[in-house]
Amino acid sequence: MSATATAPTRTINVRLPAALYQQLEDLARATERTKSYVTLEALSSYLGTQGWQVQDIEAGLTEAEQGEFASDAEVAAVFARHGA
Image (cartoon, rainbow, N blue to C red; front, side, top):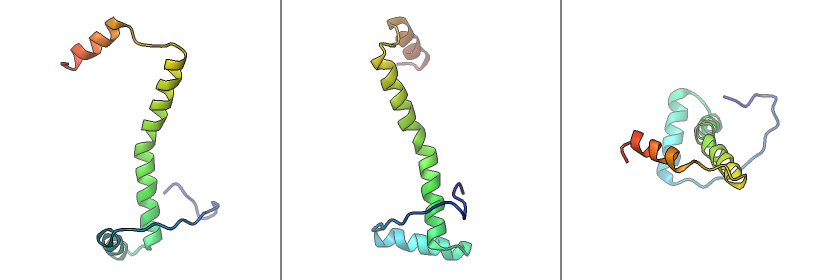
């Protein structure tokens, strides 16, 4: 987990569908962890795997604002490589 015991923390409240809450309780019990621990692990994992998308979009927007676009030949090469 990326958070450490000495890192500052904040509290949030989240409403969960009953079935999801039950899954959380079941997993916490089965792994002998707290619901908070399991939730933090899940959220950290999700943010870690999804965060790259925002970074790539922001980088693409920056390039576009600077006029850095792919040429027609580059676009055609990508489409040809992927069968489009």
